[in-house]
Length: 203
Image 1: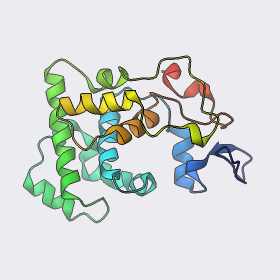
Image 2 (image 1 turned 30 degrees about the vertical axis):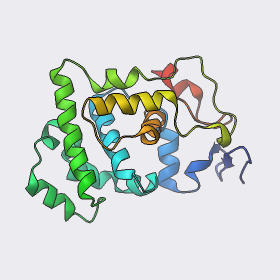
Image 3 (image 1 turned 180 degrees about the vertical axis):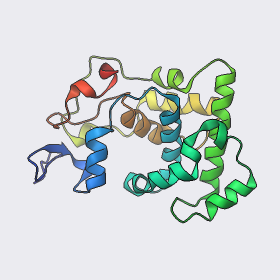
Image 4 (image 1 turned 90 degrees about the horizontal axis):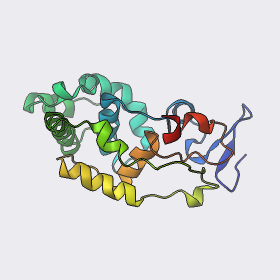
């Protein structure tokens, strides 16, 4: 049963944000990952790359391919991905389990090299990203209509990452990144996932 405000009542009696629908893998992602703070370099890098692969597609499509992406990209180890050459690109383009887009694959390799460059400057992706977290206190959105697509923070994050050489990141994908990595808490008010475990305050 759908709530006009954006919550969906599932068969288990729990209300969830509208976007996860009734897909089991989406529900698991919503319940256990989305909005929970992430500070470690590799998962942040992985999600940044996957946001690039998602462009023009649904997140569900990429989510269902995530295990294959992790295998194909060696666990998204930045040092390994940064060393990918044409043979690796050809291998990835031939891998039907992932999104086979040459520009997106090259962007992932470029992003790995940008991350290594960031490390060489004594910076970390986590520190750069978390400078754009929404400061507490923050109240959860009351409905789907008030959840933004972009924010000043996402515009600034996209601009900052591009300045460091990262590619395939714009204000919209940057905001999706902020939501998923817990830098904002956009679980709707009334969602069963407790606010204590999501958003910057849970870090």
